[in-house]
Length: 216
Image 1 (cartoon, rainbow, N blue to C red):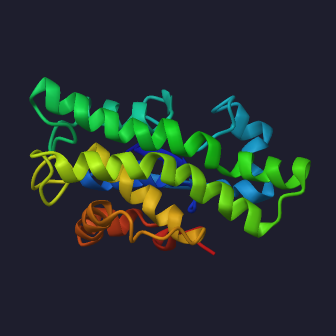
Image 2: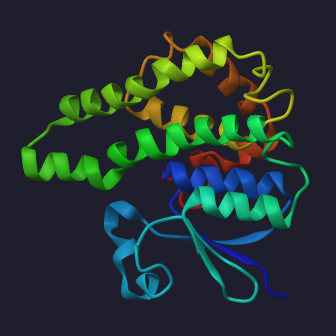
């Protein structure tokens, strides 16, 4: 019987998001690793699957290829609605999407591997400079998110109540990435608390980079 195929890289935060969502939905998948630092995502065979050469990609049972982690996760939520990853009420759904997109659209695009590599190769940035860049752009989004989450009556154990969802997945993956660059989480106690709650959930544990078959 055919099944889903996940094209992933263990350290990719976007791949971490999707791995968590797949496990939360109870979906079995085959894992295909592409080592980004070795340029395996630029191999012609993978570019034939995803011309952007990015991970993750999810190949459905019928061969349809889905790309972009948030789009894939929302697809999964529509096709496999239990457990839901978005609240039922429209304003609450918009809030969760906004928090998820703050991470996925404001932090990730300027802090991903290809941008950091460009800083090193083109501008001669060393490890300290790259870490400073990374931490600066995390703070630009985490500082307002911390205030928003702390002030919202919708925030409980997780972003939108007592069950984790899309926003929690994005925050969790980002905080894992932060640790690699020495980002101090002390200024973000609400986000740190949500991260700890997520880290106690088996699906989040299963999606961690260090639990993947290609982990180094």
